[in-house]
Length: 221
Length: 242
Image (tube, rainbow over all chains, first blue to last red; front, side, top):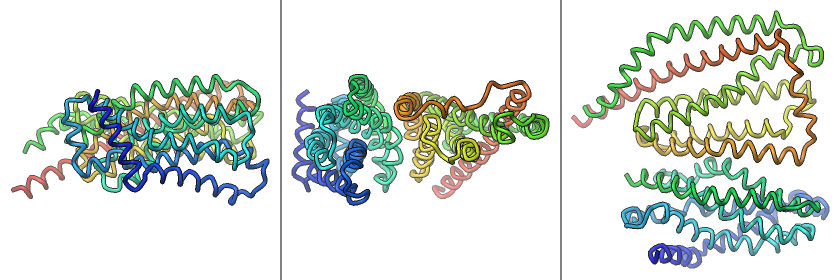
């Protein structure tokens, strides 16, 4: 267990120090959301109507942006080989890498989300549910993304291929995350959406590390 | 010559495939001729949809095949991944473009039917959206095969992707259904065809059979090409290694 903890700490430290990957993801999130009022016009009712969708799509892209570095950097400097050879079970190693990715990308996005929701004039009842569904959705994105990152790790220009592989798989997460916030804004209960989102997270937690680890083993052959 | 050993089994497969290929090709032609005759000439125009109902005879079998081929692909991927059976990898690989073509056909004929019937080429209806996502899954799978220089190395990552996609197809379908029923009136979905009489059902089933035989015929053709390409590759490599 200490090995896995060490791995998480190492990856988070790298993300915050080396070129500030975490900072870049939040900046990307902020800039993408800022482009929408400039694109569709500053009318507050329209912005309020599209705010939830814009926030989640932008968060999805921001989290995907750093996915191709999830295993690539370790692959290039050879430490991925050591991780595969280490006595730690590879799915758990993948889970640790996903946790680090979520801590360095997902958590900053969750913190930035309400501020951006304010800029998008989101209706007030949406805020707590926005935080909650972000909390459930962002780990899903890291986990599902790990499959794509594992499959593209040995490929030249894998970063271009990655969105094509993982974006269709992100659709259910997007639908239920947005659905929860919309339900809360419209005065309906967000509970069913949040429960499904939690179920998706549990499923992803169980299956994604295994699939991603299988892909990594192939890349190491 | 270890590379050639792996194709001992495909050689046996080729013998059988070559024997059944003319039959499949013949059945494809017969079913298409019969199905198109029944669908375009015998079947009466629908009282509600008029002549546009005939699009259904291409659209519905194509949509069925889109799902069927993806299932074949996932099954072949699983067998290829677990038992390391190279022929199954090839079945999965060669099925993907055919399945993508069926999916594309279903989307295009759906749009052609939607324009006169719904008054629009495209609606974000649950069924349309999930077929569109299926099309993207096919494209991603094909792109992953393309990304590798060595086709033997691409087989397993592609199999993982096909299986992940297969697990996800029901989830995507379910989530899109949920999304649609929240945001769209259900009237669009109920317009999907009146109760079907035999004069429509029989041509539809004949066309479905035609599509299935077409798939098998093209699959065998493509498999033959793929096996030959692999053999040429193995021979060239053996020659270079001297």
